Length: 162
Image (cartoon, rainbow, N blue to C red; front, side, top):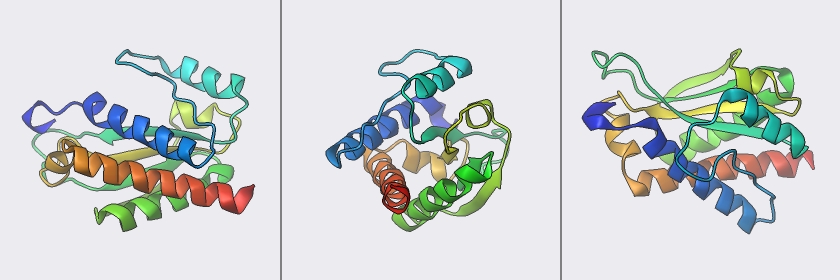
């Protein structure tokens, strides 16, 4: 990304904060990794399945060719209809909580949301290659804002469903 910004330096702190915020509300949040290591897609799905998780949220930072710094914004993906409401709630919470541009809620065939049996979404928190997104994504303040927004969307979903 811009200025050497790496996805893992953005999404790991956000993910840890989301888990902590959910735990503070009594939700048993399980991270697929607790340190800086690569984890293939299949083990991520297995962790969720073994835990008999009620939902699965995969958090990412988007990237596009470095010659396209004009591409910025939030995207949230779902595969099955059972993930659509979760995707909409998280996506709307992020838009409200961060003011970032809306690139939409979209259906996709990403492995982790296609192979989980529970409602599953993949959240793109912004573009590490985006002129507007990258400077925000690198700041702890924005990472906290993003984590709070994701957690709020998850909690809204839980309140509606359980």
